[in-house]
Length: 295
Length: 295
Image (cartoon, each protein chain N blue to C red):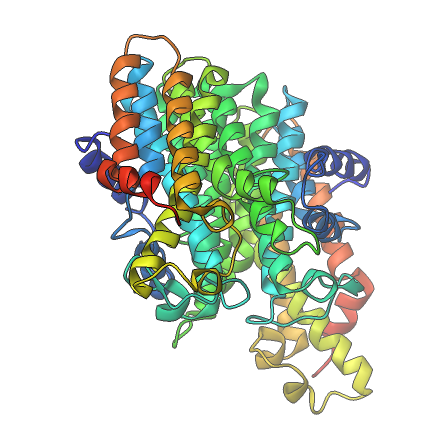
């Protein structure tokens, strides 16, 4: 969550993709994979992973960086498959054409597949000095990505006749936040279970902030609060109980995330980072304005 | 390749899928994953993996079984995504409805994703007693599945304007055979490079047998040799140079595979197994008939 981690994360991601374009490879697929990863978004998940590693007194930076790249690669994979015509059919992503729009549906399917493989490859490549840490790390990464309650399960809820909304959000957004925090601890040789709650609350807060920004953005765009229910096509706390209640809920989740940081050498700085991330998601002045609003 | 390995492989696959349907999971996705794995085909790749492990004097059966399940799960993932409407649009697979036909396109995308994750999870779960073997095992599995020359790369060639046919077959079929042989060795703590050639030749032989059976089957179905070029929509040795030449080529590849078995405790029995597998792919009488044919 510290800005100084960004260059390390970008380098770790570039390292993870360094060998995808060896001679004799199919060039368009490699280009599609690169398009899915660069330029990135906020890189929140790898930043959380590295911040937890640091708080746990990181002793194997190579493993922590391989792990951080792994969670981001899984996130990118999920976005690429999310944007497929059979799901969201999104034409843009992060302000540029989506992979399926720029490279077509088939390369988008394959790029997502390749990114999942690259995630596990990146994790394993970082484990050269600490191989005994790899089995639980792979298990945690797989739990964040697959079945029964990782990202794939989250998207799987979209294919059920009846959706369990809490489980849907927990799996689709929360699972990889939880995995990111736990993996950061495991990469540093620390106990992962101490960090699960932090990941869960941050995942919930991220989901809440997403809802709030969606609703607030729409509100601003419409110039008035009416009609935004129609503009949004999915239920959210902001829509159901209003922006003030949703913002108070978000602030409560951030408090809980802060309290969830276990006592350790780096806990004070990690709490400060949770605050900074909260302010990035919903700036303090906006939060105050929203809490005071009656919409 | 020995029949006695089959029950172990089916059990290892069932173990790998044991936790996908935990309470609160999306049930249809778990069902789609199960549909993709059971009932299986010949399970050639995990049998190769286990046979090499045995030839290398296997000392960690749990790891060998986790690895064998992993290569089969990756194979199943590739079939599910291969059958998608944007690729082969196949309605049947192994004599039953394909995943995309039975569960729809979206669940087929997600089932493939979940199977890739499960493959790495299965490998790591088996590594509890030998964690130091896991980093190179993950690297080998990833090389068989991803970029620049694994299964995803093989399918990636289908999206290029100009296809390199040799690289296409090597990546799409050969890479996972090579990975299966190497992983079998690595799971037993042996040197993987000794086993690469066996995997490569078996992969080529499997591809050649596929072409031959396709052409011979079509020939039988049409009742005469004419018109089969139209019935097949992809180039193959059998189609280009006739069934006799293709069958001689297949037999040469099997000879080379046999010779590629390194000298070790179990090499004699592994060579016998290569012969048995050849006979399963193209029965001896059929091979003799085809070599004598003038088509």
